[in-house]
Length: 359
Image (cartoon, rainbow, N blue to C red):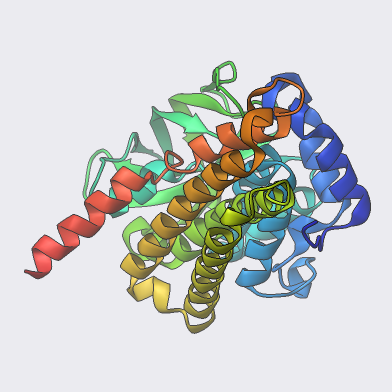
């Protein structure tokens, strides 16, 4: 079996509840408190801010460990911890001071809400939320069609907002209780259902300047994009590790022909893990986002190959409802990896545009 660095009680709970977290939206309420009880949200947060200290790569590893048991839980972890990272990197220290204690203890959910912004940053999409000045504050309108970790009645949400009456954009923190915010019913996903994933409509949402995470989105977003994407990579790493481990276990039953391709794939995974760790350590991804895009693409391809090898190693048992249940869940989880924003198509489009511009 695969080594597990998680708190043993959390690992056991995730393993036992992974099928329900994949299939039952009603199970979502248990995820955030369970993760918080194991102090995973404190990883990589400075001790002065109430965290456990550590580096960005430690957060990636923790998300990978959770995702190896349940990608639904890993997805929630990613969304919540990425919102925490926005506060840590915000010049608005008062906002961070107010919100971090509840977030680190899982008493309220944090939602990134910046998938649209990351596509905007890559030139792939316009911002979907606009703001008009109202006194010293702003009034916001727009829609975010896909946001994860929107715990009903208890969430903070980051959104990139374009000024409607002048150039530029900023990043704001919204809250479930804000008048004018309407959360949809959970999206009808084929898996990863216990993730509180929904759409948000904003109609005349009034915020004061103290809710601004970053006044200049164009300058700030490139600084947080490495965390946004690298934490996301943790989901792929965890799922790939688990599928490779499962394939190795199953391959002993007369399928030794798969030993070499599994070893080759595991080595390719380690190469990408090292590249990710090095880029985070040196800060290279802030000025060279294309390198991070390529790692994200490579990891998604490794996940696809890993789940394919797991199927080959398991054989016909993988197609039986009971015997193949864990494989079927991982197959659905693997299908999500290429489409999570920014999707592989969007990343490849951005890389192609960069190559064309350079030429």
